[in-house]
Image 1 (cartoon, rainbow, N blue to C red):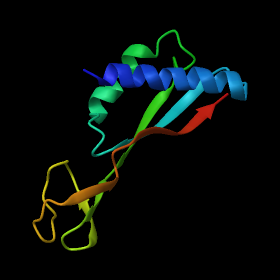
Image 2: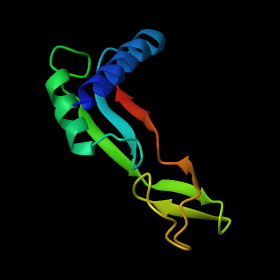
Image 3: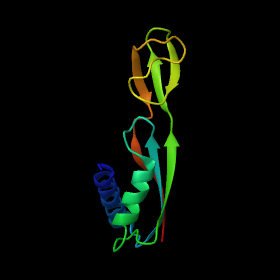
Image 4: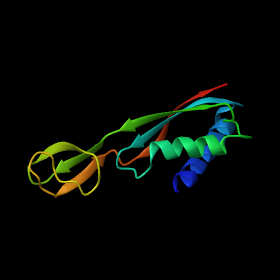
Length: 113
């Protein structure tokens, strides 16, 4: 499950921010997970719960914000929403799509003390 390593990266970000922003405790992590990011939100929750004991996020809650996949269709020249890479354009059925959004995984916001 690669979500464990993804959450390990999130934990490193929390530690780095705690050092640079001078806080001691994380109360909430708002994590944006794109539909095309290949990260399963439920697996991310599990990994977060497994890794947070003994960290500055020991009592934190994880809020996952799911963002849709967006692409530009080269055949119909339109922005479209897609749920998976490799899906056809929902408008014209073409496969010439360039992903424009929804492939990211990022810490959007933190609540800290």
